[in-house]
Amino acid sequence: KVDAYRAILARAGSIADEYGAQAERFASVAKGAKNLAQRLKDNLKYAMAQLGRRSFKANAPGSSSAARRTP
Image (tube, rainbow, N blue to C red; front, side, top):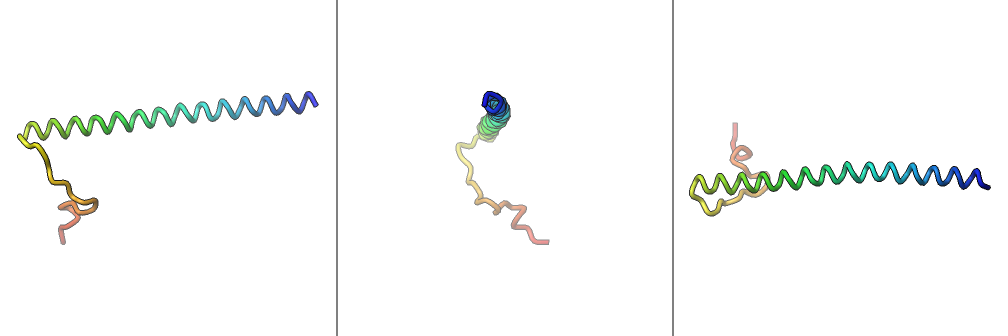
């Protein structure tokens, strides 16, 4: 019975370590995505200031000028 408990404890520790490492990777990816979003927002604000614009008309997804071109 003690050996079974030892095996269960070892497995539980292994699972905890594995999911802990995975959580760290996900946190890193989330942080990177958040930083990217902030950089894009800052770049857009900078571009708008350089162009003297207060707003831009946004295109619907998939309706960019490149998508409307015909060969």
